[in-house]
Image 1 (spheres, protein in one colour):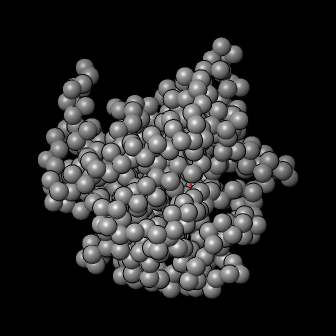
Image 2 (cartoon, rainbow, N blue to C red):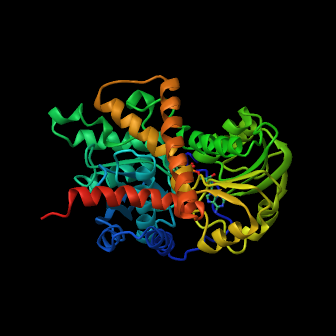
Length: 432
Ligand code: NAD
């Protein structure tokens, strides 16, 4: 992840805003139609359960008071406690958080973990604040959310511009305001914590690792060796940089990278060396062992696999025609617009959709939550083995739905989720 140290390079391109929740609903409506989802259940799932907006004051280092707006949207908890990341970004708003919370519900249902869907964040650019200001902002947000999050109710995790440190501040704030008897049994109020604070081994790399397990499986199914394959990554934070390092370990070659500060390309980019550069400079731009390229050149780079691992709505009617890859493995949430989807399908570019491909993060968050509940700590081998097993079961369910309904991968993934939720709603009924 881009560690919020205050030195991140600011966006050099405007961010497209076009109703992310509308895009999420379009995907949902299509899958609901194909699968003949019960109309009452469709109406339930089309709505969020709670939308929490908090405005809170924080004192800055210069003594001035700034007012921040934070969000937590809880989409659905029929499968288990609400679960989802917290994002610090200027584009965070209710529309975005609603879509991201809804996708979390689908994700947990596909990979069969007992969590519902939630998401949250603060509308701000963390690069503009000192570390001490970020700590005060995070703690004050946690305090404002108090009662709306909890270890058995709603469990945040890291997302764009938040990290293990941010989770540690939330944990500490939450525990401090708990009655003493509750404290030691509330460690699982957040996941993605530092190891020393009750985090799980393997959580940091989990989303990238999951992306790589999916790519490996896709290649193996087609008899294509990953060794010798090439790939491009958009976003070199937590998800993008882990996916790149793990793919490189399997013999694939990184040929292009873009982040908030610019884009680079070369015949071979050393993923670990690039990460050292990003840690020092805050961006991939000006990495000396690659050429600077334009946004369009980055999207046009020939590669076997493209891993979007930045923000939503990146593969669009403008960029999808440029892509020259065999597979898009969606590390980011919502990176492809409906127009982008149509173009990729028409070009014969396959997609492993976000709600399957990046579910590794929530799976290992679930493992962290379980370890905290039972005062256990698992070994990395165990975490990786169980992650692979859960994720690939989800992968197989999506493949089966593709065959059974004759639909595109995204719709198939959604069908798997909707079927599971529909069955549960029918078993439990609607109170009263
Ligand atoms: P991060 O903050 O660690 O990294 C984000 C990266 O995106 C940075 O390299 C940043 O420079 C880049 N970026 C931002 N704006 C960009 C732009 N306009 N163009 C190109 N690059 C841009 O975030 P992350 O945790 O790696 O999350 C990335 C994506 O993966 C998000 O969509 C997030 O919701 C999703 N995701 C994350 C996790 C997780 O465990 N962290 C889990 C599932 C999904």
